[in-house]
Length: 393
Ligand SMILES: Cc1ncc(COP(=O)(O)O)c(C=O)c1O
Image (cartoon, rainbow, N blue to C red; front, side, top):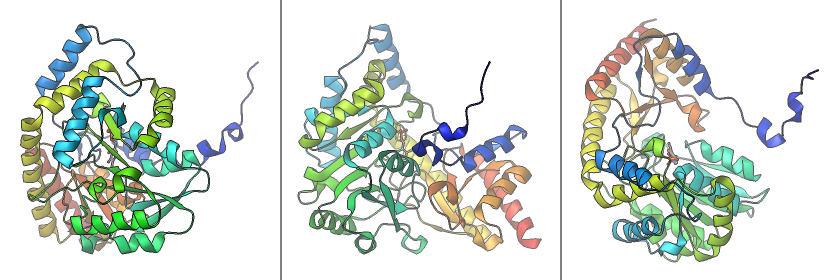
């Protein structure tokens, strides 16, 4: 005889995870045809063929066993060189762990650094996986807002205002998701000084580092002062190289962090699949041209989105990088969740509301740049029709 097990048997940390708006959108989209998806942060490009060939050759060539938990030596060496060359960061290969996506790098870091009751400072809006991870570790999220009028760049003074004696860790994604906010060098220097002054540990998520618009500069937080001693820099391959399904990323960290972090990596996944690590190596060695051409196309699409939003009279923060535009639809009279559901239902265009990114104001939507130009044109035309209809009603 089977007995129904009550939900109360779930651990408290599992119960506190809320079911997401994403599920509602997916349920609604199941009954619709002709959807243009500008929702998920997954490039429409396929992984460049050179990289795929390297991964496939590795599989055929016997890279089918466990590796040491931190990864293949040749990839860790290549990442160490990349961090020095592109970012001015000095992390030897021994201080690098190859992970299953940046997601795992973040989880390892947060589990290694956050005790129950510790406060973790996060920018808002943000990639909300951070919240789940802090929750798993028993930490408490403290928010620092970023604003449309600042193009969603982070300000050191706002961080200062959020600090208490429980503040332990500052997590910054630069450029940020969903806003494309790019925090400039001067402000990063002030944030770095603040972290040292308040003895904060730092996770710097630089996954969008290669996707910078308008020739602006990306600066790694770990380059300031003595910040490298207290900074875990995370980065990966998903976005820049169109490798989301490969699940490859890495963290680079101070020496004191490595032993427990390697144990956590081993506990979570033993190692990152070695054939895929060989693909990542090819991306570092031969991927630059492909990244540049994808970036050029994203910039072209960005121009289209911004022009279209201007035409619709919808404001936004101008993204400094990333793959998204965070647009303020409050002038339509709808909240962002209703806007997204109705746009999907009426015009079959999928975008996500800010509430999916820890932005309870419910006034912004995230539009991705991840569909071919012609279909983005079509989607924006449909959105315009929808906005005009909504304003008239
Ligand atoms: C800021 C940020 N960090 C990490 C990730 C996860 O990346 P990965 O696919 O490498 O796990 C994302 C994905 O959207 C992201 O936006």
